[in-house]
Image (cartoon, rainbow, N blue to C red; front, side, top):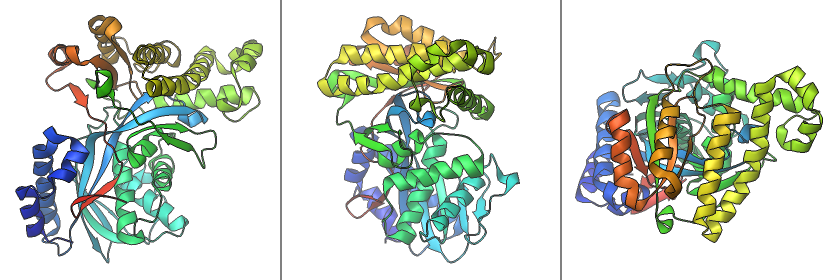
Length: 432
């Protein structure tokens, strides 16, 4: 592998521009070069001059359909995006040491992998949890130093946590397992670390989208072996820009709100005699509505109604994309957004009255886009971002409008990234 000086020379001379264009688009090459040079500098400043430096990346994700369906074994539609977490890494004989730019260093011994209660809710738990999961399956683990830089805003709904988890899983896979572990298994290990060690209940959508890459539809009927299919379309071909609007309503500290969604859906499924909502249907809920309302409460019932409708919408969205029916696709996106707002109720936290930033963003998007686009809450909700499909002719004006309300660079036009976790090397991006 190249030395630091060789990396700097190769990046500065444009040797990796083809790889960077593949990941970030032609217009993102210069900024990407600068970021990778910065992550190298950060590594050297933190750990000293390495003899064998490697560069890795894992993307954030956008959720297109299937809002809060994965944790009940439902169907989803998602994609990796060109905002990512990158790392400069060197294998060592010691601890796993991860220095994320702007944060304290995390350090974990590869031989001390029991969950630590005091680490819950902190990034160090993700490092330990991933190493523990690798060890559990008999995969090789070992020490490394890593310096990371993220362009995925924390609490933005683009899943910075999944990108971070998949990045570290990709590093362990490359350094110690010759890239032999599948992308789906890396995603499952990442989810395990977040659920068990970090303490945040989550489905597998985020990690799978980040690890697999591209536009993918996922069916979690069997979560141990979910069906993952590529959806080979480009929104540009439909004349649409994919935009996320950060309303600056941070959702990073709302674990209880997310947990309540899972908990309430679980209560309904159990009342209906099954473990997960995917194992029952709307007709069963309707037939047992009085008992379910009395036992679980009305919000839980509404969230279950959202699940049934949203789960059925995903294959319709996939079919609309594959057949090129843009109008049908946009209509389904708006239906998804309305269901999330009205039934799932994840646009703002329970009890919030003065701070309802996502609701404002959705209202403005509806007024600005009308019949020429679509809008919905994005990802986990309660804060973070909204997702909008905007016609190319309106994109510039839409960005200006949203930036004027929520601040400069609040509205970002995303590019779908064709692959998930990756190592930059040779003359191309090496998938691992």
